[in-house]
Amino acid sequence: QVTLKESGPGILQPSQTLSLTCTFSGFSLSTYGMGVGWIRQPSGKGLEWLANIWWDDDKYYNPSLKNRLTISKDTSNNQAFLKITNVDTADTATYYCARPTPFDYWGQGVMVTVSS
Amino acid sequence: DVVMTQTPVSLSVSLGGQVSISCRSSQSLVHNNGNTYLSWYLQKPGQSPQLLIYKVSNRFSGISDRFSGSGSGTDFTLKISRVEPDDLGVYYCGQGTQYPDTFGAGTKLELK
Image (cartoon, rainbow over all chains, first blue to last red; front, side):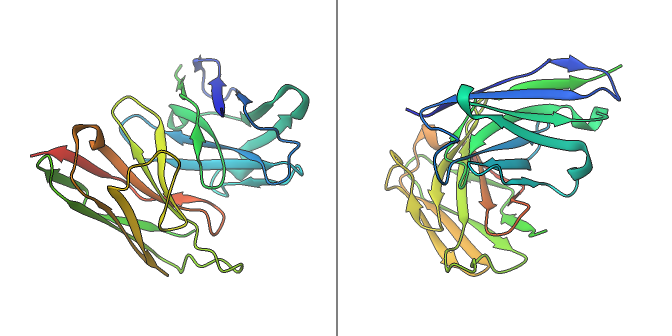
């Protein structure tokens, strides 16, 4: 079955770089049509899509954060990564990875707090 | 960006009742390939969102036929019949027709 799990630092300081890992099973990013996406959700608020990466290494970013986002993958180890540079308190959220499109399987989410 | 507008913001329902949630997009969600990438998700308290409906009206694997989606173009509806306690939470519509993917602000379904 398809599973995804996010991991991250938990807490970091403003201006640092947030590095997130999505480890998945049940599908492969070497398979045609497969991808991994990242979505975040501040506490008590709605969903914001951040980025997708596809089997062919095609990448799409939310323009509102594009200059700060880098998505990548390690196909051999069934992992996808997201880096967000120069974080701010506004980046405090639960970060989810999910399989697009639609987002049919989601990870449990990882809470990230940006605080000085 | 495509703006997704959901109404109502919250909804109270009695168990066994029926509800409808509306989702309107600021642009047509018909893709060049003819598909309409409009999905519905439910986020139960303390959980990740889960996919209910994709491409307007297709139920995802394991989703009860009490959930049905309809609509076209810019106007979409999710109907839930015979509401059960496990249906409570926040419902989101989302579009994947045009990057960036966007979601509605959510509709909270509560018990009356």
